[in-house]
Amino acid sequence: MTLDVGTTAPDFTLENQFGEEISLSGLLAERPVVLVFFPLAFSGICTGELCELQDNIAAFDDSSVTLVGVSVDSKYTLRAWAEQEGYQFSILSDFWPHGKVSSDYGVFLDDAGIATRGTYVIAQDGTVAAAFATAPGEARDFGAYREAITALTA
Image 1 (tube, rainbow, N blue to C red):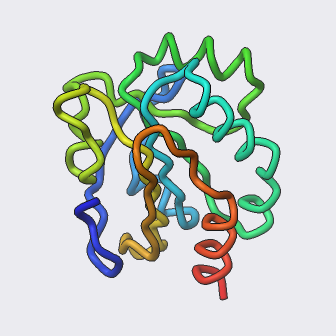
Image 2 (cartoon, one colour):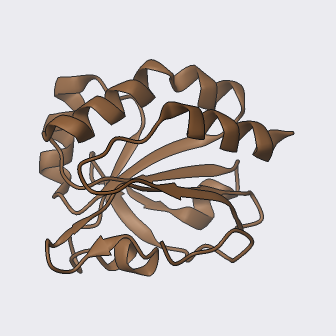
């Protein structure tokens, strides 16, 4: 991961699973944001991770933090997956230019053409408040989200 805590998070505008344009600056105008980069929809570890986030959505809502997923999948793939799994948060498509936002955040794997599992907690002023990642094939621990959210809202 190339963005350090305290640096300014790059702004972006991407389409969510419904084709709505979502910008980081627009989200931050309302509350802090947790960006969850993941490799691919419909894959086992990604499904498990995002289902765990959905199961714990109250932790984000109660802390007034917006949860957003990001992958290089198309918005159509993301919509089918989100509907199948019942996700109630935006999942953004970094499809074209392929992986641009993932690259800006230092989580794009050029050799595989996908993002790795990287998470950024962005404070309302646009700075990175926390960042964590796991090795390919390894799920993130939900405890890291809890710690980052608690530190952000303390």
